[in-house]
Image (tube, rainbow, N blue to C red; front, side, top):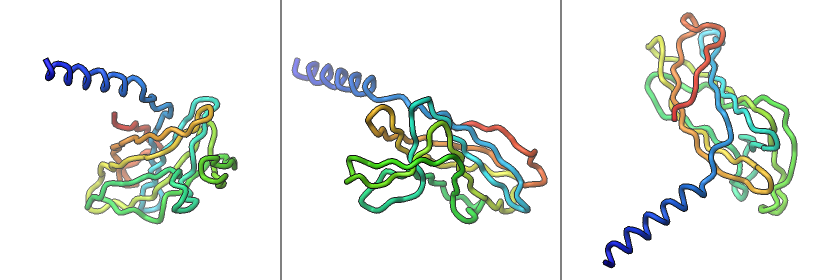
Length: 166
């Protein structure tokens, strides 16, 4: 009987946790374009109205709210430079972190990473986007894994639509 109570308690806790966890409101799309002998992977985040996503720019070690894009290591491509972002930035403060200044994007933001492919004509680029989205008065944390196939500039159309993995 005690075992059954533990199982039921675990199942109830799991059910409450999974239903209370918010769904990721951000829609990601991936495209690529040729840049000389390199490929530029573009990651676009589209947000619902009234939401904001925090910039990749790190404020300080004391304010861990910035978006982070990490790429799995692979022998098939090299990261060139760092991730850049394009969009219409807005400034606001993080009330929970002594009103530290934050750069946020409403509607959408695009991140760009230049890649140099090695010997292969194409490669799968895998990674994770870890980000905070402000909806109403709370900052919610999400992680979005992705895996996209990119090709060398000679084999790349001007823009190829790709999606994240679920």
